Image 1 (cartoon, one colour):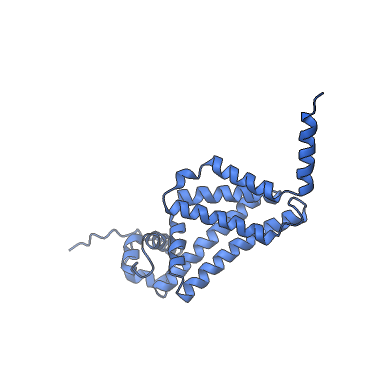
Image 2 (cartoon, helix red, strand yellow):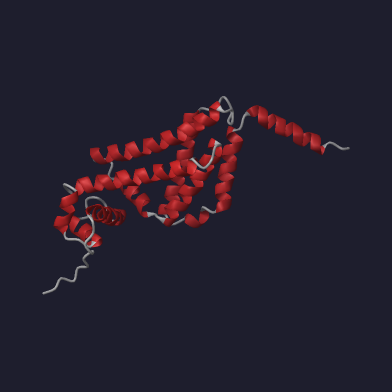
Length: 221
């Protein structure tokens, strides 16, 4: 009797491993770690279950690799985007725009991360989630620190505090995406959020100069 399960064509080892990871991401996005089974992951990848164990020692190892990749993808893309902007504040605005668009177009990694937070009572899972989150935070903090050194934000602004606020906006984007409220995250709203950050962080002397210039323009001639 012929099996009805769809089999993937034979691939080089690195391609097969990649296919398994992509399949596992889709499965872990729609089911918790505990309820997702290796049989389901193998079926999603189009391979036999024993094939999984040629690349990963067990389901936990596969799951943790999926979590690591989700975090690496964000940082890799943030680095790519930031390199296009010599101004760190412009880089941060572009990173925020990329992130909002990415979670809308590719929500599975976000769903995996959200489920991982729910499963964070597991020590290994918590360590991976915490590590990835802190790496993202440190990337943002370093950009704010650069802006601080360059005099682009007020000298009294704490770059670490600014970074946590930036990450908090990311959490709002995550929640709205998971709740199916993406339509409320339009370009106008994101632009207004950027404007709020810019106004709150700008050097006070610059704000005073802008106010004086505006008042002068409004003087009767």
